[in-house]
Image 1 (cartoon, rainbow, N blue to C red):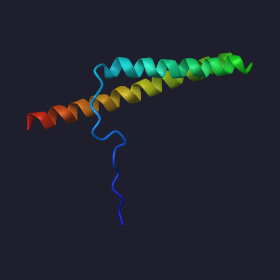
Image 2: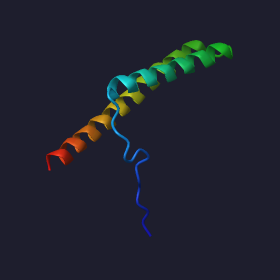
Image 3: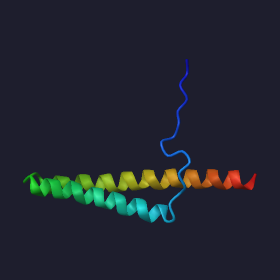
Image 4: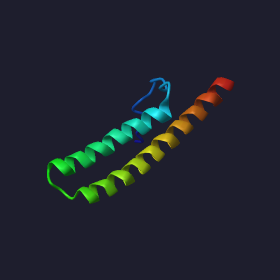
Length: 79
């Protein structure tokens, strides 16, 4: 029996500024990573490096997914 995958955000509209919003959100998450390292006296240098890598990967992923969704929506509207 094959299970059908359903998107978690089915039916939700695309935000007004999806690229900016995802960059800001991922930036805040990156800042939280660094703050947690600083508050817990952890290795802040490593946390900054991890936060930068996280920001780049997460933002790239978000932008790629939004581009796919916007292209899909444009194709559906043109039909």
